[in-house]
Length: 425
Ligand code: HEC
Ligand code: HEC
Image 1 (spheres, rainbow, N blue to C red):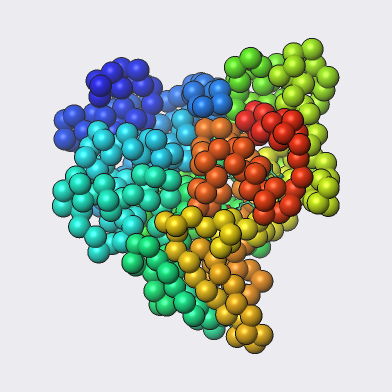
Image 2: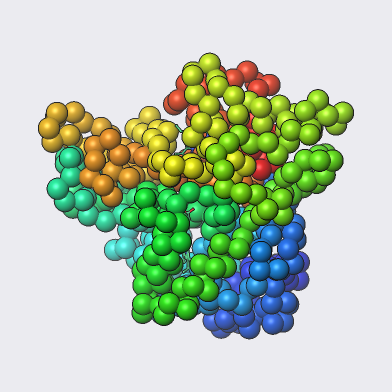
C-alpha cells in the first residue's frame, strides 16, 4: 500500500513521507526529488474533492529544492511539512492520518509542540494516536501563550478538554494557512495578524518565516538569505482551482479562473469577476458558478455581502487588512474538543465566552476578541476543513455557518450556487 502510494504520487512531496517510513531514514526533500524531478511544472493539476487545483509560480516552475523544502532546525520539520503543494499549501486531516498510519506517528509533523497537551505520553503508537487527536481529526496545530498583560480584559475562567490551558496560558487551535496568493493579498499575516498589521506584507512574511524556524522547527535564527529565498518563493505562488468535473477548465471560454490568470491580476479593491463570461452560459454548471459569483458579490437580506469583507478582487483577503469576528470562535459555534475561555471587560464588567481570543490577545483590546484575518478564498476545495479552527467540514457548512451566525438568508438553490462558485475558486 505504501509502495503503491510511492508510485502513484511520484511527483508529490508525499513520496518523501512514504520513503522515510519504509526505510526509516530522514531523506531530505531534495534527495528524493532528484529521483522524481526537482520541480513541479506550472499548472500541474492536483486532485481534490471538488476537482483539480494547480499552482503557477512566477519563478517559471515550482522549484522543490529551495530553503522552503529544507529542514532548518533540529526536529526534521521544514515549511513543507505543514504547507503541502497539493493541498493548496495547507495540510488536511486525511493527509495527517495517512502520515500517521505510514509512520506510526513518528513523522516530524507529529511533534510534542502540537500535541493536545505537551505533557502527554507519546512513547507508543497508541499513546501518539491519543496525543495527536486534534491534528488527526481536524488538522489544527496548537498555538497560544500567556494572556496579554495590561489588556482591557481579564481571563476569569478556562475549560480545556485536553487539560493544558489555564488562567496563565491560552491554547489556540489553528488550521495551517496557505502560503499563496500574496500578490493580491493583504499585509496581515497569520490568523490573528501577529504583529504584521499596518506593516508591509514583506516584513510580515519575513517575520513569519524567521519565527517559524526558531519555533516550530526548533532551529537557530536563519541567515537573511535563507529567509529571502523562502519569502521570494512564497510570493511567487498563485494557487487556485483549475478544473471542475462537468464544468471543464475554469479559464476556458473567456472565464478567468485558475492560477495563471490569478497570477497576472493586480491587488485591487473590487468584486469577483472571474466568471462574468459564463452568465447564462449554455452549460448549466457554468451558469451556476456565475450565479454563485453574483450571490457572493451582492448584498444579502441581512444587509451584508460576502464581498464586503472579502474585498480584494478575485483573491478574497481584506484590502484594508481588517480582521473580523464572524463567530467562528463563539460559544455557539464551539465543538466540545475546543477550549472555552471567559473574558471579562475590566471597565464594564461585561463577559464574553470564546474558544480563541484571536486578535484580542495581540492587542489587548476588548473589541478585538474573536477577530481573525480575512483569508484568501482561492483553492478552497483543496484545503477543507475551514475557518481558523476547522469547525466547518465542507463549503456547504461554511455557508450554513454564515446563515446561522451572521444571519445570511439563502434558498437551497442559492446556497448550492454559492457553494459551486466557492468550489471553483
Ligand atoms: C508545524 C507546522 C508548520 C510549519 C513547519 C510551518 N508552518 Fe506556516 N503555518 C502553520 C500554521 C498552523 C499557521 C497558522 C498559524 C496562525 O495563524 O496562528 C501557519 C501560517 C503561515 C503563514 C501565514 C499565511 C497568511 O496568509 O497569513 C505563513 C506565511 C507561513 N505559515 C509560512 C511558513 C514558512 C515560511 C514556514 C517555514 C519556514 C512555515 N510556515 C512552516 C503551520 C506551520
Ligand atoms: C464580516 C466580514 C465577513 C463576511 C461578511 C464574510 N466573511 Fe468569510 N471570512 C471572514 C473572516 C474574518 C474569516 C476567517 C474567520 C475565522 O476563521 O475565524 C472568513 C473565512 C471564510 C472562509 C474560510 C476560509 C478558510 O481559509 O478557512 C470562507 C470559505 C468564507 N469566509 C466565505 C464567505 C462567504 C461565502 C461569505 C458570504 C456568505 C462570507 N465569507 C462573508 C470575513 C467575512
